[in-house]
Image (cartoon, rainbow, N blue to C red; front, side, top):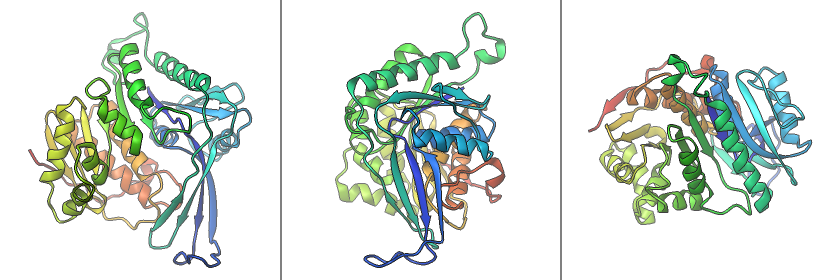
Length: 357
């Protein structure tokens, strides 16, 4: 079972333009799509569409439009369902909603025909200390419920890989080191649990500052974020991804290896058109990006994380995890608006994975 946490969920509103965005002018839309969102919610939905059971933990107000959107997505054939009890769902995707005072934010993505995406993200509703404690408790309970008891554990489930995926920005009121704290809590509660953290800015910096105690099993920075994590100046951090486009992959692998040496299990650095680099204690690999027409980048990173986790729970080695991550991320980029990929959307083009070291 996979458990995801989305501390700052959203209603994702994607508006499509028939031409380039006209700043300061009137822009008429060619389409509008509203879907339940937030990075952890996206990961859970992608996993569920592939048949992998997942539980999405998130804060939401009673009768929150976000919960209604989750219901609508389920009715339309997306994985999962929700109800009014706070812990509901299908056999594939379940939702554990923690009741909080304020409704979820609304994030808007403006997409242009050439694939350019402009994101307008609200900060989100503040969480009180009591609400933060309730979210932590719900996460721990979901992890405990997802793992078989000692009495019920079978030979097959004994070797199963379980993940907690902590994703997205933090809401106002949450401490910047919340993810670092959650990693430590989860390690104490479930030592065999694998943990992924996909975030940015201050929460990512705090995660790095807490190493090795806060080390997850997977982080997914982009090139610039990777450079920042290892203390590179801003210009050199940005140069990592620019260099990768020119085929200079060694600096990316070297930077990721610093984090692995500090305790992180795997660093998957996504590099745009240059593909991605994965570094673990076993080595480093590069994957090419399938050439697909880019319609919207919304959800591409989340889909990559889902692909990596999906391959891991199915027993895939590092090259297979990286390959599956790239296929799912590219599929998401080829789909309009906030549409998330299903197995039927995966590109046919082969992803080439090469060992770097």
